[in-house]
Length: 205
Image (cartoon, rainbow, N blue to C red; front, side, top):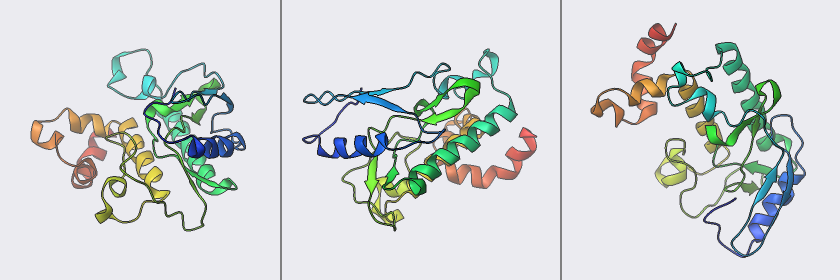
């Protein structure tokens, strides 16, 4: 169920029409939708294993949901293929704008599928530059250019940034940072991982 949707539904219908024409093993299949006033639900195929957030995040080290490094690697590759398809494989490019663990659903054998296109925007030109009003996405995964023009134009690269943040979280780097003292936990995470990459790689090996 999409929340905080605005407008007369024209943009929503354009996105739904584009999603309904997608066909990729790493993009969830849209079965139906509804447009009734502000209520705009999207109906997807059922995902037996739930979302990625359930297995690879929030310190699930002591739970039965821990995935092997090999499986996490396969999931990362699958997510990347899904993002690439949305950006380059569709007739009309789709920029998701909300790539995060909750929106990566896991099918049989934990095959990842990108879902929840409520914030998606269509990109009609090859340059992939997009005009948006206000920031969109989830804090912690939003690319800097989405919330501040000083970082450059908004484009499909915004999804790539969000994907990278997820991968770093999957390998535990982000959890390590947020569990540190208050000074380091409030630091901009990409800067933190850049400064501590060597130390982290040694401790993670």
